[in-house]
Image (cartoon, rainbow, N blue to C red):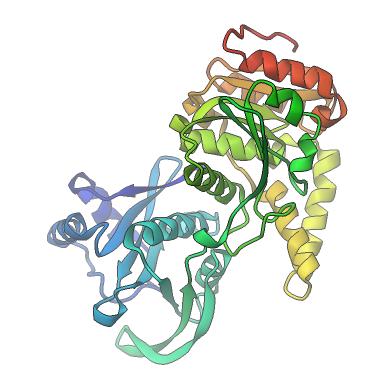
Length: 402
């Protein structure tokens, strides 16, 4: 599933009217007219065109190419101009699919960046538990409840007040670097750290400027307050490259690191030179059941104790990456523009058919199956490094080891 936010335009008027007339209004404020007319849409789209990027951020929410909702962060007036207020609505058939969580994550990043806000606040009716959880997953914390703050259907209603502070500047990756030349960024797997690439650093540094990162919440990189998911890790990678003036880099990702690299290449094709996906997967179905079933059981157990135990919460987050992420559809891979090498082991925990599906779905991708298991880079570095260097070489040709 791919969730994207688009800027509203005048050509969206029919879709906007259909959305506003179809959406469930149970937990929305009364300020949106009903029925929602062409005049209402004209006024609102004109307002958005005038104020977007200055007084607020207004975006349509799309899931796999279908308009499913709307989201905004509006700057508050007068003394609160450094504060934005978030609001969103999603069509009922698309509830409970993680769309709201991802849309909130994206719009908060845009709003903090473009509006220079000190904080973003949100109001939630106490009975709308799911909406509160969406905000909490995105680093919002409840500050209190205000009695009778909102008039809804002629009645004064209580609301829970939430707040999110900017978290981007507080997060920095721990990383190591060696060599000179074109940048090559190494991304490790779930629960590991940059030391996974101990057998790659020096051999690859003879050819490239090699940078190995500890992903958010792994190794020596802090957890921070941002969501713990593959798409956030891809956003972190973009921020890392921006801070260090890296306009373009080769990406080599292992396991979840491969998933980060894949999602990054889809979102920022202009920032990727060549792409190497080692042991990546599109979703949980790509993992052999003998491996995936214990992961899912462990995830459910950890979630039960997550509120009472920091260790259980951390385990739930880590295992959740392998249960809930990255959810990329095979047809999306056709948008990857970078030359790509897909690598797996003969006894990999990723199903071979799934690995071949990934390679087949990326235009022009090359596939290498090496003797070994999921950790082939670490346990058979000679063959792995040879395949990588050959692929990254300016004169690389077709590789056929599969």
